[in-house]
Image (cartoon, rainbow over the protein chains, first blue to last red):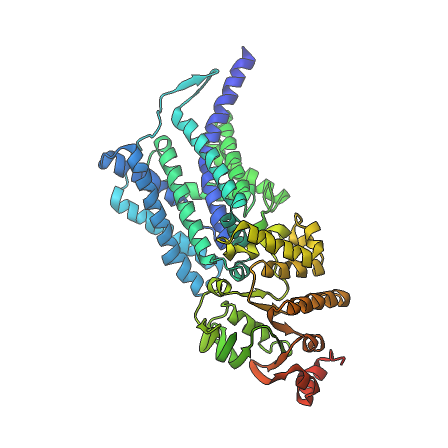
Length: 299
Length: 242
């Protein structure tokens, strides 16, 4: 009986850890993807999760569109905002030879603008975000979960596979990796490096939006939800290893699992300081992150 | 084939080329010699579309290419082997070659395979190293990858920026053997080289550059005998052995 109860607890911890972890992982991997192509950490990345969640509220609750129609609309909006961020913040700064740090501050400014704009549209209230999948508990082998929770984990797994296929099984993916290694030389190959960077921003924005649609029903939609997720995603990148979307994703999962464990055995208030402490320790031992550096970093 | 007229270019506000004119005929090898900082690499990178043109014109096969993007230049068949090889170090030899053929995505797979076979025939060593990360190769092997990568694009005009840089003498000889072979196949080349003696030996025509200008030019036979050239560059650089 005792061991069975322990297994239940373990199952619940792993499941809830993986759910949150998947979202951190999605933010982390999109940060790493953008970083790989542009050498810039996009501090507005978490805001796309916010935009995804709140745009879902707009289309499904306010406009009363069916979920299946809303999802593509939400993703298109995120893609457009991602493109604007690249066109009107990243590109002008880079064209004026701004150092990466300046460009990053630029993305931080964009994050503030996005929150401000969202505040004008949605106000400061917490919204219930309509769920694409059921939130009713289902019990399998003694472990209770919800289809929404499982959908998050499944979407994450599918996205990881798709991104891997894109990066390692397509010529365009090879070009993305080449731009990450050396943008100038990639131009000599005839790769339009600027387009690869645009793609990274837009693709990351879409992933953020998707994460928002998925996790919104669990977290609730709020204009200030993005900041926390940017930080968690950034932690995931640092913990897993800079430059690799997959290392960053692994870092995100690890943070989610740690959070769930610490919250269960201690107090959720302590979860964050403990996790930050663990990350600090990890980085002292392995400064390049748990899984080390990706090819993009080894210039 | 390539015609450059009064070209001024540079990075930001600082002009590095101060009005360079040059002509390259199809099927010939043209060399640019000159000391460090003479602007040779800037010229090559301007032709490749990496350095912005301030004034002057460039045309290739009668088409104006002055304002084209780097990718469009590659599309026209002007392909560069950059100074210092500049391989994608973490990628394999095979992937580096694949990137060389990036603009040829619409080309048939059999044609790409033919080009790869040509590269492997030229550099049999690369076939053995195909799955190896480029960064783990020796300097000479890396130069082979850099040249093979450019050849994968099936260039009409090959720009070579200091292909002998940092290589052991015996390896340099091999690089020049390869260039001679390519010349024999009718490849048009623009060769930037510090080793003026070797460059003059393979080229048909030479330009001498100093501080962003062409200071002398002529057929290589005449250039070798030209005391101005020897004084201006060859003697001074201490690499003239002929």
